[in-house]
Length: 431
Image 1 (tube, one colour):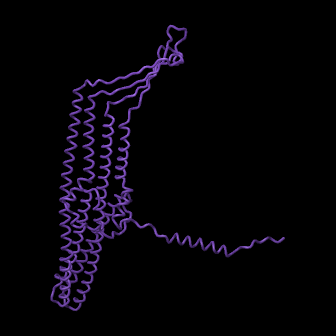
Image 2 (cartoon, helix red, strand yellow):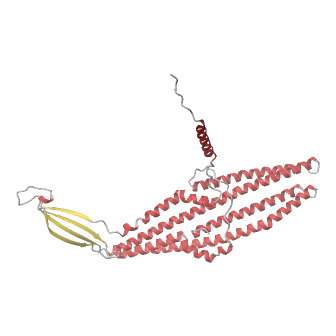
Image 3 (tube, helix red, strand yellow):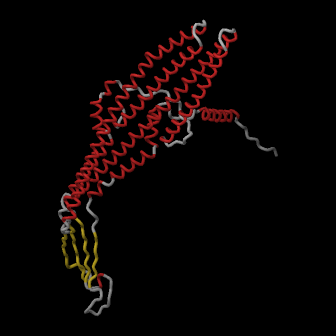
């Protein structure tokens, strides 16, 4: 008997294999997610969702909000049960603990009731505490974002300075070639070539320092983002633009600081809590109440009802006066702390605005005056050196002036970014 052979449809198999191959190639070709760091915005967005310090403060603010309702709620009632005549004296029955088999049982439901207005004050104190926690959380974010902005500016500065140094190193190599050619023709001494090589060695040493500085800034950013310290960051592409001078008016920014600074908001909430706490302490001059309702069981029937009201007698007046003086002192302390914080913040605002304007002016001078002048000087010195009218020391000095002008411009840009970060920290928002 011949075995039965099943026909294989090669066309369908080839199609299926082709689909699998294309899917695998597509998966392999799919690019991995780009690391953050190209822009400041990507880092801030990541920090808001991942930084543990800010997360802790945010959770504490949520916890403080949940304290508001319990603070103004009535205390839980109390149920009291009294078994009377459990020995069944005067009857033929023996001792018993069952309510229907003793003389009588009294059930008392007691509800504590604070004096009028105390519950509202307790709720308002809790609301002020929640506002204070919210302000502290926002202050934590303002501080965290300022640290990220500062570290990013330093990361950009180190990366840019490293690039400028490498460009100057290449320029110095070209000068060395010119010097060696002229030395070979007996036009300049050997010392010129040696000085070009010494200059390159100094630049390589600076490159090591700049690479270390960039690495430190990267590690700092990774720590703020809750990422492993050695995780790669993308190359920074740009710095944020500095606002126009019209938007940096001190009077306008002072009003914004008073209205939106999270530290001042937290201190205002502390003052409000102290004021409400003082009112609550003053209310302690008046008694609190306990209301009770008591059904009495005899046998299997409830044939008696009792109503009870009790209150505490506030006799310890000297103790309450001390508590009132304490509350008043705490209010005065909160007000003084708020005033001191406000004065300090306004002084920092004025200082940073002045420093930002100075950095802007230095950047303008370096970019529009110093750098063009240094480039013209270098071109003139290079032409003079090639014709033998200028020595090599003058040429090297002209090159150093170009490098210094570029680094001065970069330093001014970085300083302006640091000052802008401080101003935005003080305002509690971006400009």
